[in-house]
Image (cartoon, rainbow, N blue to C red):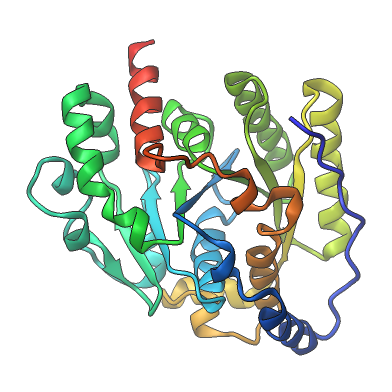
Length: 314
């Protein structure tokens, strides 16, 4: 992989309103993120351990991307502790398993939680995908294909750790977003995930690091530098630093109220950071458009079926 040079530490965000105005005002100059997308792009959101706010990042990143005019779907791919529905305060009746069994179309299980944001409850259906034979896989991929035309960004909120299903989601996605916090255990486990991903793909994977719950941007940068430097030294892998989300009491309150921060408190301290992440993933160093693995007939769902099938045979 071509090395990705770690950016200089960003200037402190002192005026949140100013930052928001800048993000919105340059939308016209860039033509909007919507104009940068052709075909669906996929982002797997990973973490080394639980409790780092991975699902909160997924939910608010989806809402931030939607603010830029993108149609976003969140696939709840945490097979053990799915909680995207809880964070949105909704209770979907159906999941991907109903699609795989032929009971429902994908359009029938999509649960709208915003004008441009939908949830795809995963459930046991993600495990079932690995058990399909080639003919059945081809059939189900055709049933899922409409989503490739209707969705700009697919976010996958995966399980914590580096189980085989997480590897499948990460290697099938255009970008793997690794979430950590400044806690020593989170830093250690994040490196373990990075190591596993590099070893399983021979370094042929696009990974970006996000430091969540940081006291400030300086602390986040120091944490990122530590993990990225370890990856360069011991794995010969250059990981991008996508940015951070500072600790904000409002996030905790939004979880209690089961209403995402960007719907509940748009002027909170951490809100501009989620919008910054949405913008950052389209910069040239890790632009989803330029790094996409999606080629003709090689969609995310096809790659996922291939990955899960291969791992089940091992």
